[in-house]
Structure formats: C-alpha cells, structure tokens
Length: 127
Length: 127
Length: 127
Image (cartoon, rainbow over all chains, first blue to last red; front, top):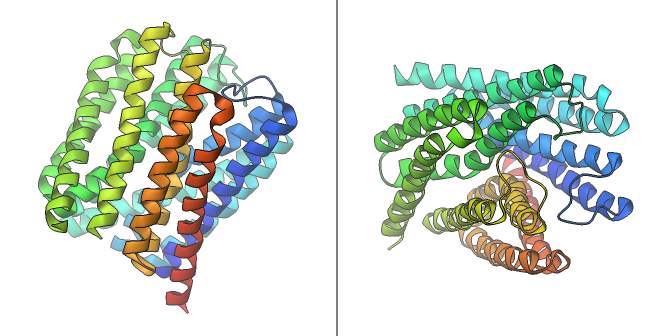
C-alpha cells in the first residue's frame, strides 16, 4: 500500500503546484480575487486546476478501493497513468484549450478503470 | 465495509456521468473551454456537477468515519439516501433551478447525519 | 487515530457551515442559481467555500497518510493548525479579499507539511 500512498501524494503535489500557478497568474494578469473571469490566460490556468479538483474527488477513493479489494500494484500503476495524463492535460490546456483532450482522456480512463475495477472487487468480496 | 465501498463507487459513478454530461452540453451549447458562463442550459448542468463535487469532498470522509466508528450498515444506508437525493437534485435542477431544493436537502441531511454520527462515534472511542 | 477522525470532521463541519453561508448570501443578494457572479459580497463568500473545497481534496488524504506512516498525534495537531488557518482565511476574505493571505498561508503550510511528511513516511516504509 506504500506505493498507493506515494502515488496519492505525488498527484496531490502536482495539484498543489497547479494551485500555486493560479495564484501566480492572478498576479500577472491582474485578475483580483474574488473575480475568476476576464482574462483568457487566467481562465485557462484556473480551469486546469478546477478540472483537476473535479477529477481528484473520485480518483482518490477509486484508487484506494481498487488497491484494497483487487491489487495495490495495479492500482499504483493506474495512478501513475492518471498522473501522466493530468500533466499532459495541464500542459496542453494552457498552450491551447483545443489540445486538452488527449491528457483528459488518459486521466479519465485511468479513473474509470479504478472505479469499475474497485466496484468489481468490492462486489465479489460482498457476495 | 464492502457495502460502504460499493456505495462510495456508485456515488462516484453518478458523478462521473455528470462530468460527461458537462462535456456533452459544452458541445451542444457551443460554450468553449475555458468559458463556464454564457448559456443557461450549460450553467445548470455545470452547477449540478460542481455542487455534487462540493458535497462529495465531505460526504466520503464522513461516510467512512461513520462506518468505522459506528455502523457500516447504517453508513451504507445513509449513503444510498444521499445518492437518491443527489439524483433528484440533478434532475430537478436541470429542469428548473427552483426545483433543486428537495434533492439538495435530502443529500445534505444524509451528509450531516454521517458527519455528526461519525463525530460522536470517534469522540466516544477517543474518551 | 480517533483524534485524526475528529479533526477531519471538524474541518468538514466548518466547510458545511460555509456551504450554508453561500445559500444564505444567495438569498440576501438575489443572485439566483445557476449564476455565480454579479455581486461582490456573494462572490467573496462563494470563493471562500470554493477555495476551501480546493484545499480539502488534498488536505484529507495528506492528513491520513501522514497519520498512518508518521504520527497520528502530529497529524491531528497540524490538522488543528489547518482548521485555524481556514477560519482566519474565511473571516479575512469576507471582510476584504486583500486580507485573505495570512489564513491562506497558514492552511497551505499545514497541508504542505502533511503532504511532504506523509510522502517521507510512506517512502521510508516502502524502502
């Protein structure tokens, strides 16, 4: 389970970095809190962080339930795939929102595999 | 605990579905990323997903702490109540934002029961 | 671990309170769902809740992994620091967005300490 914990915190660290980027681009673009719109560059970085947040809320529980009921090794490997997808997503989106799809799809498929695999594992245990 | 894991992932699956709906309605309404405003239909579906996200971040920890310190069976049952409330919320909100209250209240009360029950259970154990 | 569970749910309770505040200020300011912009007071309270959400998604996993691999007592203590920081943040931000920094920094440093400490603990166990 240590590998699952490490992957969890590496993903958390990438997200922490994104949150710092939002603060930085807020200063650069002059979009003062509480505003969240009004500058394309700010909105891209902000949406990258928000979309990552939207994913993490189900990625973490799916990762751990999969790890517990099916396999910690495969869970950790899918977690690494998720992390790579999310880094691709962030880089693509900031360059051009039209390039956010590949990373998004990789991350979503990793989450879906963890979710459905975890569900299968918990269901088999429950029988 | 398997029932708690299954409820967790069913709720995650409903949320995953909502995220797909946001992508779909983005295409339909022509609200291109990073924009999140400008079309009432898009904003409704987006807010349904966002509000579900806002709830999940405390629903999951409350569910598991209640399950661990009080009762896994009651936790799973309250989790099903939460899920039903959130489905009602999503359907009501998309039809008319004025109809979002009943599902919202059911979901919030389930979360509050899990939160306060979990707190009581952990506190009694801590004594 | 009971202290960690209690801190988790106290933080969840503060967040639950913030969500109620958003609903209340929606009624007061007449910003009807699905709108999330258009009134400075509403936007401040809404951003406080949103930013807390943004933090919680990595605070909770970091807290528990730190507690499990390093120390439950120190984790709970850092969790209390986080909670105090977030209360300062909320009060400061609503009064004046320019006063949100101190609470934000305290909360972020607590999260970062939990994240990096948890990573160290899990890594040492993994070796």
